[in-house]
Image 1: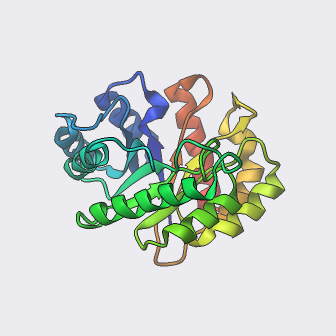
Image 2 (image 1 turned 60 degrees about the horizontal axis):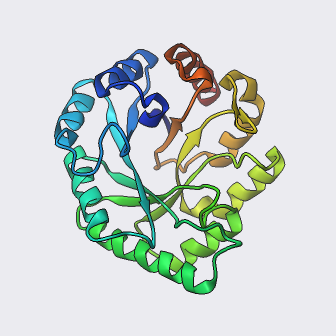
Length: 250
């Protein structure tokens, strides 16, 4: 089944309490808490954010970290993991390095894959999964590169988010979903033209096609996480959520 959620980075300038209030008013089910503003690593608010989220009848979907595989320093991931545990997050989102697939050689890919396995083992002890961001300028910048990386990682606790690659036409995006489907977990939802943010209702037709491809198995739950909205306004978010709900209910 699909559940609807919010990436807290959508409202970076809002407080934790305001993000929770916006989420409740929108009638969504959960929040991916960002590690940049709302719950930084080793934040003394992580436990409180977990409590406030649960108190509001919402789920913590994941901890949106900015950890770069293959580039961790000292105990950077361990600090992120400790924060995720306090936040009661079932997953941690990380980034697949700092190089795009065309710039990365085999040695670099192995370095990223080895670090992914390392942190996955650490997180597994806390029953937490690792989710790779599907994003440009990383080793998940194409479906082919993402699939190759996940095969190299080969770990039961490592999964992949998906979002529309802004540079590709709809048909290519649909084909790419098939290439990475076996590793898919949650989805970052937005409608852009290039880098221009547009109302989600403008992209209903193409998102209907995506959701048909992204639908989870009967025993699975997949979060559709709204990320960034036109002008960054809560009112636009409310409208976008209602549009997305109508697609899911269909």
